[in-house]
Image (tube, rainbow, N blue to C red; front, side, top):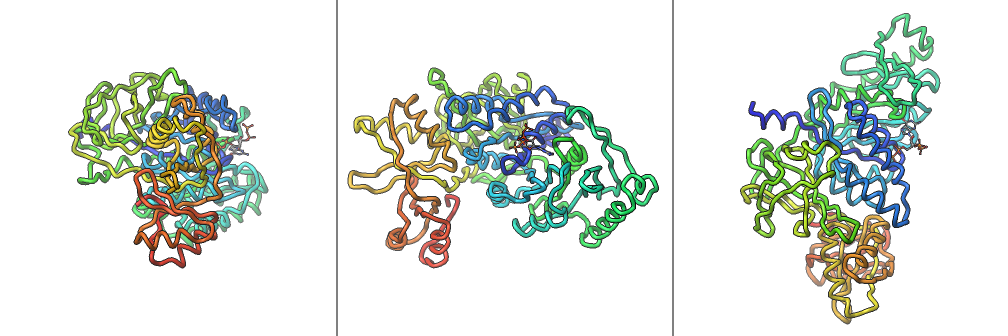
Length: 528
Ligand code: G4P
């Protein structure tokens, strides 16, 4: 194996998806702890403090500032180089999370043991499913009583329509979480409660099912219940099908507690043996092998500098093939121009040197002076274009109003650039005075950021008039059919920034009925 092949083969790039409060920050900290990257855990904690940011501007800025330094958490564990793509904790920035998932090769779905699948889990799961991303499930907070484990996994299976294969099983004595049964090697792992609230790794001890020691520890009743459950699982499940997992058809499930570290290490071990290395990626022209020597990648996120005196931005590039070197010159496919990739300081959580060299599977942050957009492809030979990043249907809409008509040009420019950056989506409705801009966002906080940036970066004082719509769909059909459908109650017709027709809906109910009833028009929830 060449050095390039070796480096790529040890990359594991993933993201954690969860509903707020399921414990993503805590689990991230623990993965870093087990990966030996304890120095990073501080930045994760700082993010947790900032996560509670409301619409208070200073808080938001702080949150963004911190997420710049921790957009990718990279650490080595047992010879593997792990890239944990960090996603915003705040639901209002979930569009960022959706896009980040495009850059990941697998995902960990984190569930609260009392709540199971929640709204945000489902949305993020849907994005993973669309990409057929392999998904791990980690049932968290098992240190306190929760839903019955069998019922919980049944619910996941039912609600998400994915097969669930328990890899570990919780060992409970009453409400006490003592350890897990590892189904892969049939071992029982008991954990010793730490005295330091999970600050350090915990000791695990092996035990045998049926042994006197285990009977004494659990008590007859709990022991027999465990034996029964294991028997039941073995009866129910065939062996774990790794290929089905890689196709996104079955999710291996783990039980644990990020807070106390219980079950984190068995999970990490399985993760390492199952998580895929960087796979080939589809470009318009052909399928690209990660081990192709020439560099290629795409921009999945742009982080603007909130300080208006520093206009430069950071573009996050997922490397799809080859090797990256700080300062290298590549071709920017959309403009056809060469572009020098200089890595800014402090983007990556790791040391400076780590940014000078990166391989397929890694994410690099590069300086951008405004020429890059989300979805742009970069390649050394200039001959590859990766499929664009899908635009996700916004859930909030507002008309943009500018009191000073002379600022309209600035407004248009600002909206165009901010939409290219992915800060919000822009639509136009046909008005008497020409197309009127409407902005759409997945989360409301995106609106606050938008107004602030329009004012500080483009000198436009705008206001937003909220519109009653909650859903948008791209539509295909004859002009007449689209117009007729859009005229229905609680709907409106707009076009997106690229002129593609869309219909807005005021409720889920309206959307569902329309999609069912109107067969002349095809509806898409991601831009076709
Ligand atoms: P998030 O990033 O997914 O939003 O969740 P975060 O890790 O911040 O965790 C949310 C809350 O759940 C925190 O409590 C955290 O301590 C708790 N938590 C996380 N993992 C576990 C676990 O395994 N068991 C239990 N019992 N709790 C867990 P908090 O009170 O909101 O914050 P804090 O005061 O503990 O920081």
